[in-house]
Image (tube, rainbow, N blue to C red; front, side):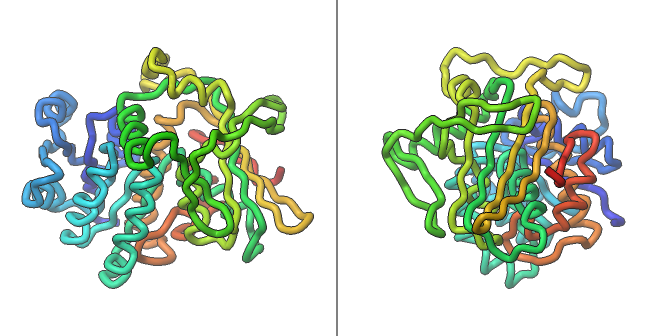
Length: 342
């Protein structure tokens, strides 16, 4: 890896700031890009980092933002607006594209619209390389191990709290608008299905010390797009603890509050992944702190592996398909603790 310059689009956002900081910790040189020039310059103040404002409706500016970069990480939501233009710029530049999108519709669009073009170009496009989408996919892939198929995959989230960022609220609003009133997506019988009923509430028994918690079943996250994109599993479901699911949609829930010098919140999480094949069951568990902050080591580790030539394929692909999942998960320490022997 000779070129360590990485453009971060949406660098001044909540997650973008974590990504920029982690890139610098890993020895990369971030280029700060996004739509708001004033916020970019404020973020760059005193750092010496290059600032390149670019609107998604200005291809020339996007091209300029990627000049000299080895890769681009898109942290700018709503991703329904930013994903396609930044991918197009990455394809023109001939560099890998990574995003942290948790918008299911944007993830679906990426696979549908760019799979053939990226594969033909020998380019890599990695969507949802974040806490939602990327982490669950890596855990499910590691849990599968030598299985070539399974009957079901379940990804259950236990968050101590969920204080949404402004970006999360905006992306959620865009997704709701695209789905229509009351609409939601599930992955069943090998396909994405749109439903208009209310998801059920059930209990999920997480590993100790979390234990049994009430969860919203079919609280659909990006894992239902990333996991079946490469694993032969016809039923993929995600679950969220009721308290967190309630908080994230409540209009009066405050934004995340930093409690340490790195800007992380006090939020903790458990991600419990179970894959089933017949009567056999395999499990992988991840624990850590601050779902927005841990997106940074996930995305940056992916970029490092892409630039080191460790990707197993080209085209549009999820993390579990691109990389050695157990090795990738081990590399996330100390940011995420993973148990693959549950």
